[in-house]
Image 1: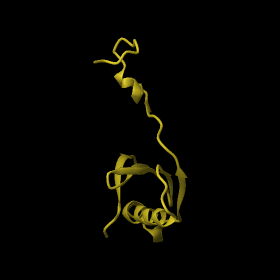
Image 2: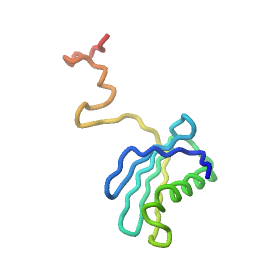
Image 3: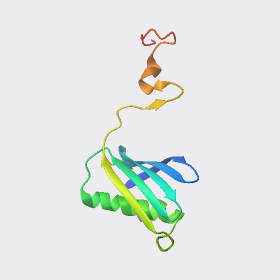
Length: 114
């Protein structure tokens, strides 16, 4: 099946996965999946407006490409997806604070390195 959306996995644990959603070279969202025994929970955040038909197409793709490989429809109780519209405004890590701080000089003087 030829799919319009590309799903790139960022994280995989024994009970969850995180994917970025791409349409061509444009990032359109992120999926967080959590596998809880016989129910799969998804949080989908779209970074762009998509028509309902496109959302349904993507949900079908997620179900067929990812969720069903973990637990087929006939073996699971439910696949629950919560869909949001939002944007990434920053990223934080324990190691370095915000990603914007990476360009600050080593001495913490607030000056960018040249």
